[in-house]
Length: 280
Ligand SMILES: CC/C=C\CC/C=C/CC(=O)SCCNC(=O)CCNC(=O)[C@H](O)C(C)(C)COP(=O)(O)OP(=O)(O)OC[C@H]1O[C@@H](n2cnc3c(N)ncnc32)[C@H](O)[C@@H]1OP(=O)(O)O
Image (cartoon, rainbow, N blue to C red; front, top):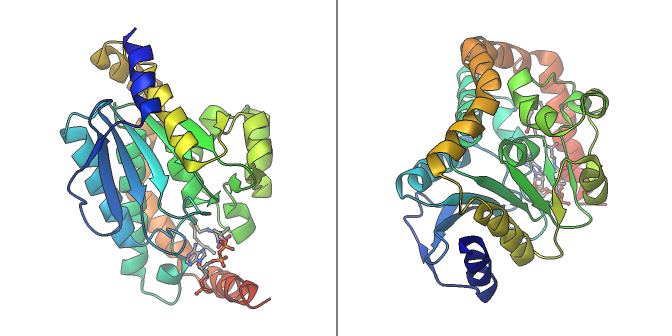
């Protein structure tokens, strides 16, 4: 009953409050009737994850946890990109300390999202490569618009994704599909992602994606939130424990790898290709 009431309210497009926007790069809006918070990334043009966006995401997740929201929907303010992953410009031609900060803040966002007891869902309204896919797979449910791409393409960039970064991905895909995709650095189309189980539903618009995410969160309306949250965290405990054991070494390993001349060269070429793409 509660669940169907919730769905009706969602469908009617009930009013919502814009909470503190934390900063300029994310906003949090709580639907007054459903109590579900929508966290929107807004760093034009592609929500590439620089340190500021990563810090703002953490602040917004904490805000949502503290304001008694019933769940969190992550989405993007842009029409064709959910998030382009880490800001490669911020990692290119920089010092080791900056690289350590970038990676530490990426870890912090991931653990905040993966490890929250709140119900979480991603309304993937555009491309979601690398760090974009990481955020989407840290959530419990994914709804994606058609004709976009999602995946962990690190292998194509000459980078080995650490285990924690793969864990959301490997949790939702059969092992052999995940292994092949990760070793190929494969980007899935929306349809392929749906067929493989990487996304749960396809929606024709962002609004529909957000509604479907809200319906997923609404499906827990009759479940005790404490029992739900603790059950979720038991499922995730092994990944979280393993991550906590290696997190400092992982920062050092990333900074050493990303600052190496070979990887800096790959980044330079990659950035050049991205810039030239726009001129073609
Ligand atoms: C080499 C990396 C080495 C180490 C890092 C290890 C860590 C890995 C985790 C990561 O997250 S790495 C990031 C990986 N991300 C990607 O490979 C995505 C690259 N971007 C794209 O494929 C496309 O931009 C897109 C599919 C996301 C969107 O395509 P479209 O809508 O056609 O936009 P444009 O390609 O024209 O891009 C617009 C604008 O944005 C800039 N940009 C795109 N992605 C990034 C990024 N990740 N970091 C910084 N900047 C990015 C792009 O250069 C364009 O800039 P203009 O100034 O030319 O407008």
